[in-house]
Amino acid sequence: MTEVRSEETFDAIVIGAGPVGENVADRLVKGGLSTLLVEAELIGGECSYWACMPSKALIRPGVALNNARQLAGSREAINGQLDAQAVLERRNSFASNWKDDGQLEWVENAGISLRRGKAWLIAPRTVEIADPEAGTHLAHARQVVVLATGSVPTTPDIPGLAEISFWGTREATSSPRVPESLLVIGGGVAGTELAQAYARLGASVSQLMRGKLLAKMPEPARKLVAEGLAKDSVKLREGVSFRKVSRDSAGVHLELDDGEILQAEEILVATGRTPAVTELGLAALELSGFDGRRLRTDQSGKVDGTDWLYAVGDVAGKVLLTHQGKYEARITGDAIVARINGDFDGTAKDWGKYTQTADQYAVPSVVFTDPEIATVGRTVERAEQDGVKVTEVSLPIAVAGSSLYLDDYQGWAQLVIDADRNVIIGATFAGPDVAELLHSATIAIVGEVPLDRLWHAVPSYPTVSEIWLRLLEKLGL
Image (cartoon, rainbow, N blue to C red; front, side, top):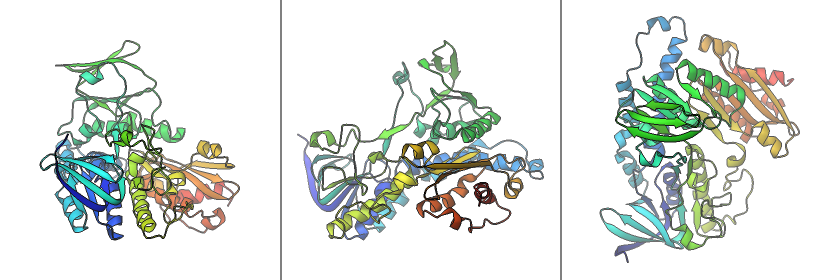
């Protein structure tokens, strides 16, 4: 039996101090609850050190250089390629050099208690914490435990992969060097972003996938990204299968099912993520809201069948995006406080203060490739599955603002309309820097702005946002 060094009690315990855990803990403390935050790694989590921030820091210099090359007058001033070392050093600064001093200061100033170590549930409202320095502790929650442990990478079943060293997204976003050659397995967002980033930093890159590139995106948007990858000399291979992989002094050898063998200095495996639930002690608690792989929660984040356990962010398995997890955290924190104070009975009401409605209808996401893909809400296919009578309108992005923005600007935009209610329920933009068009679409969807009212939202001229006017005109407005 593990020796327990101490015990302590709080109103709430939050396991996981990434941005999601930080946000929910902050809301709980502001609501008057004493709160313990537990983290086994760096405070600030995956996004701060190995995902969102460092990956975008790797991507952005290449985008800026490519934009300059697409403008007459600026392209003539450019000599040479990216300074890879300077890019990596800038990336390091955005990852705070993998130190969490600043995050620790924020936690302390917010009035949140902190324990470092691995934590798991041993009983309802009781958490065991293995602190590598201070030993094992027990923490009890008077009210709630909130799980905010994020997600972990999924590893494909490729013979030989488990026996070799390989990059996951963590290694790719924190590497101190650029390899001469890189194989990327996976056609999703992370694999595609990093394939292009490393190609622009000087690596010879091949990206391989069993399915299609960015398969969930509309075909015109996918095509634009594929063309962008080709311009950066990324060798794209869709619909391939893998026989085995090995490593020796010459590098990595990846054999495809047709017998072809590809070789590279490094291999990056980016084939998705899954909720981090396996080491939380959930199976022993026999929760009706946990099936061994996934947690089921209501729209305020409470795990089904409990009155004390909540899950937010990636671990809840709804939308694996940092900004959406933070949204869930704010709602869940407020809902917990309201329940304790008797101001919320748990009744879900769409777009209510304690309901995570945007998870269903208005999730914004950006693929930070060059060109970008920015999307929010439902696709045509998803809307039709939901029984919505759909109207779709799409156009190339070819307005005065885009032609001024870049020479030979190539882009595409689509709106998905609920024909019965005459409101936008989905939008996709593809093209250089279209991420900045996305929030207007998100607002239109969340606000359920009727098209005849949206017609009065005049885009400034000459901006790329003029594509909104063209889309509405094509709808007959």
